[in-house]
Length: 419
Image 1 (cartoon, rainbow, N blue to C red):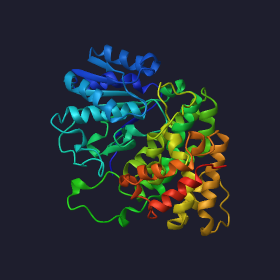
Image 2: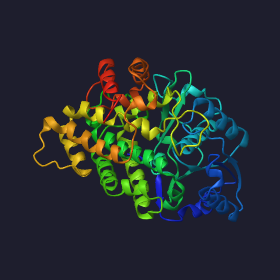
Image 3: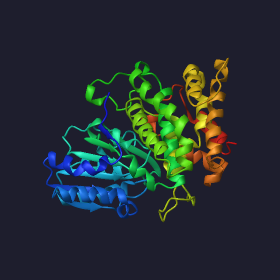
Image 4: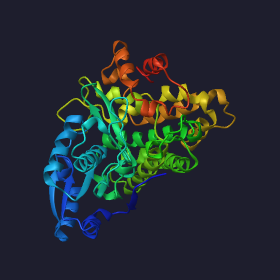
């Protein structure tokens, strides 16, 4: 099991300057994005750094849904800056960009694909020590402040992939619910569904003791181990928080209690999936977002087409859980019950239906588009989406039920419309 140190509480982001001073940091790379750069979460952190007289440079060219090219720009900035510590203030895109900058600045002779997950990259282990990295998360979604994973679009293949190694874990994850009060409705909604799917996928992943073969060298053991008794605790607790606070957090930006609880749920689910892993919802989400045509979501500001990550993940979730339920029906029924479904006398044969039904209830109430057809895809696009899913073995192999081209095709077809 591995996890970043986590500090939680309203206002704790004001302390990061003192944290970096205690680390003897002399020159810090502060990573954020153009939007956040003007908002309170970054201003609070800048003031904290200045109080401690810490020299820092701001990198704000982070791309929402990073690519290999946007990573390369941040890596170049990091190499030129010769920084001795890193500070990320933002959501998953910002934190993942900061992780990549730290990794490659500390490995200046590495080729970009050296650490990228196989089969797209070489999947080499990270053996060098990285610089301290503090992650101040400003969304309740990715859980990136807790994990050793960084995700990006690999443009040559138009598909998402990533780097997964425990060395990438932030030294400290800062979970300050005051940073969430700036989040608009759709961002809160889609990041919240990312939390929900992190918890569900990690809880229903193949069991840790059923993954084979065992790595010949412990350092080759993947970050994602499969469902396990410790991750289960965190994932189920995250689901229970989602039941009570998710809808409230989306519908009322001033509901500090609900947004605080969802911030915790994000961290809890991050601990769960950061060790157990995710599977098919995320595996299929990568080409869904990577092959985007013209779709743009309300409340998101990029000047390029964008399917937000949480939306690309949850859009196939009903089909996924119907498909995998025969492999672990008890877990599907338990998860549905935690989320509020009546599971009295539910048969194992109905496990997939009961979980997908409760998911669809949340999705409908929170106005998720009606399937991938509303994101711009038709049945003619499914072969390309399947082709983009097949290389995602890092996560698809964690499905409790084996998948192939035909089963992925079927799930995508079911996801063209979902209501």
